[in-house]
Amino acid sequence: MSRTGRPALTLRLRPLLSIVLVCAFFILLWYGTNRDSRWHPSQVLSGASIWQQQGGDSGNGNNNRPGTKASGGKNRVEDVKMSQAKSNANSQDTGYDVAITEVDESKWPSPSPYPPLPTADTEEYMSVCMSVKNQTLDLAEFLVHHYHHHGIRRFYIHDDGTEPPLSTYNYSIPSSALTFIYHAPVPHNPNAEDRAGIQEKYYTDCATQHREKHTWMGFLDADEYIEMTGGETLSDFLHEWARNETVGAVGMNWLLHSSAGLLTRPEGDSRKAYNKCIIDNPNNDNQAVKSFVRLSLFERLHNVHCMAEMKNGAIEVGEHGDQVHVPCSRKPISRDRWGLHHFATKSRQEFLEKQMRGHIQGGGASEDWWHQVENEEQWDCLSLTKYVP
Image (cartoon, rainbow, N blue to C red; front, side, top):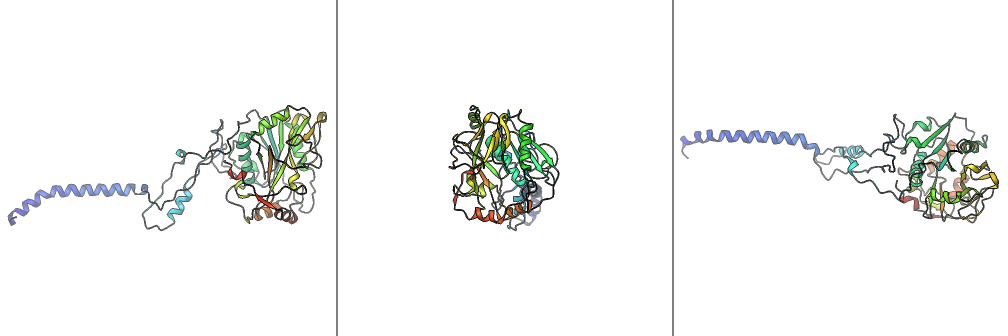
C-alpha cells in the first residue's frame, strides 16, 4: 500500500477498534460480577438435610439445632447450611480465585427413614415419663428416636434442677409433644442416696395425674432406646396386651452398651457410635427390665424398673407373657419382640460427667460400675446404627 493510503485505512479501522474496546469492557465487567458463582473441584460441598418431619408435623419446630438454646418461637427442623464448608474452602490457598455461595439443599432428596416410620399416635394412646438432669444433648437424641420411630406424641419430662432449664432449649420435634415439670435444684450428695424415692415420686405423679389421658405410660431414662425387634409397632404391641385384663404392665429387658473404646463424646449420635454390647448373662444387668404400665391399673411402683402393686390383682409380664417378679429382673433374657438399649457408660468423658452429675436420688455412678460393664464379654450390636433419623 502506498504511503498516502495509510491514513485513509487508519480512519476506516477506528470505528471497528472502538467497538472491540467497548465489547472487551463489558466482557470484563460481566466476568468481575459473576466470578463468585464459578465452581472449581477444590470446592467440597458437605452436609445433607436433616430428616424432614412427616405425618402432619410440618410447620412446628425451631430454627436451631437439637439441644441448642432457644431463640424464641416453636420447634422447627432446619436444613444444614454450608457455612462450615464455605469457611474451610476459603481458608485454604488453592491457587484458584474461588468463592462458595449458599446452596439451597431443600431441593436435595432427604434421607429415607429406616426402619419405615410407624403411624403417629395422635390420640396419645401411649406416653413416656422421665426424670432428667443436665442431659440436654442426650434428651435431644432420645426425643428424636422415640417420636419418629415409635410414634410417641407425649413426653412428660421432670427436670430435676437443670440450669438453665431443659425447657429453654430447642429439640427437633414439635414443642406441642413436650410437657416439662421443673424442680428447683437440690445440692447433690455424691456419697449417699439422700433423696431415695424421688424418681419413683416423679413417676407416680405422672401416672396418677395423667391416667385419664393415656392408656399406657413408659418410665424411661434419657440414655435408653426402645427397639421393636419382632416387626410390630410399639402401638400394636401395647394394643395386643390391653386386650388381656390380667396384664397391668409389660417389662422389656435391658441390653447394655459399653463405651466401645471411646474416650470422648462422639460428634455423631449415640446409636451409631456405641456399637458394642455386653453378652446376655443371667448374672449381669441385662436381666433388668424397664416397664410400660397400663395407667387404669397403676397402683404402686417397686422402683423405677417395675411395678410393686396394681389394681384388680393385675400382674406385670414380659414379652412372652411370663410374669416379672420383684426385684424387677427377667430370666431367661429375651428380646424377640422388643428390647431396651441402655447406653450405660458411654465414653470415658461422658462417664466422668455422669459421676459429677450424680444420680437424682443421690450418690453416683462408681468406678466399679464402669469396670463391670467394660470388662464384660462384648459383641457387635449394630441394629441401631442404621436408624434414620
